[in-house]
Length: 475
Image 1 (cartoon, one colour):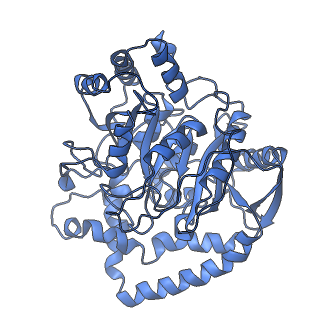
Image 2 (cartoon, helix red, strand yellow):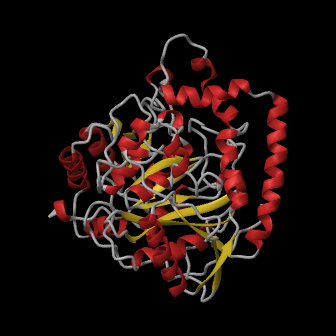
Image 3 (cartoon, rainbow, N blue to C red):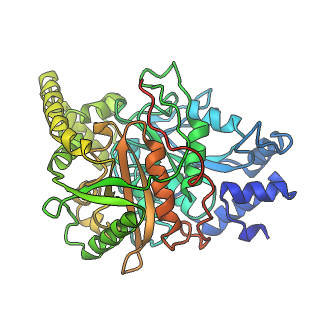
């Protein structure tokens, strides 16, 4: 029965190999979308006939020619799909591109089937997923909790098993926070490994496309297909995707010290993080407590410093219009850039360099970092009372990562004592995506949780225990 078929890449390819028709998989995808009945997930849901035609145009089932043959996916609506509007959750900004974004084109060439474009915090400004003029997506596990942002629709779609993977973007944590809140994997790759051509920027120097999936294997497989050097993207970098290899027998893991760790009074979250650290130790990790003050200081710079001016460059014309076309919280955050001068920007660059230098010795003494993906949970009611404060708190362990040119992956690690999803983020130096993903796969496989909100079991590891885990190749 297709209704019981997990939409993982391996399960779908097994079904195709046994004779399943791509048109039937597309029909099942749309049946699931109708059954979930969440009008907030999609800004642009393609027609079933259109997707079926794309599926039938794939030709014979061939995983050598098309490694993602027949795999359904969605993209956040700040990523271009040819002939479909890109809105960035702002109808007044909308345009219709003639070409796919570079990454979307690569995924389609690999055989993946694009189902639609998903909702987001307007102009990717937010970590809660509610700053949109469209209906707010419902958290896949608990409608009282925020869906997470800014890549809200993509994460919710993946968690429900409507598609196999979704593309988001990540500047401050938008590819990791929604993963934690919806019990899925969120891969935030090394900056520059995924092209930004065809993506509406938030902070162009810090942005990356991110990948949501039900498993680490799937997220990493998509990453491998999507990654290629794009000479048209001035921020592209030549980092090859290393194989997803075995976990080293011994490694050092930096974690926030007791004096610098922050849970904002959430003792249940603290207990779940401590349990995750025991699991890391069980994989050969030695826990090293670090004073996280420099990382917290860097995180604050993202919205308190001149980087807000990068967001301003994208919507300057809209901010100067008299018509109220922007979400009020988005407008208030980005309009702060009007108070910055060029001299302020340079002062912030100098401050950031000093903070990075303070953090360097901490990173040098460990192989990777492990942090709670979120320090606590945020409800819709919390945001009614304060639309800004909870958003800031939820980014405690995500905001610093891109500012420091690190890679990261958020992974489910079980259930908290109250039943809510537990998640940690593994962080490493640029180019070490395979290192953190390998450990993430191990942790997920032993977490005892189902995939997203589906009830499907975590599949046996395929890639994580094969191959060679290699380091980065210098630029």
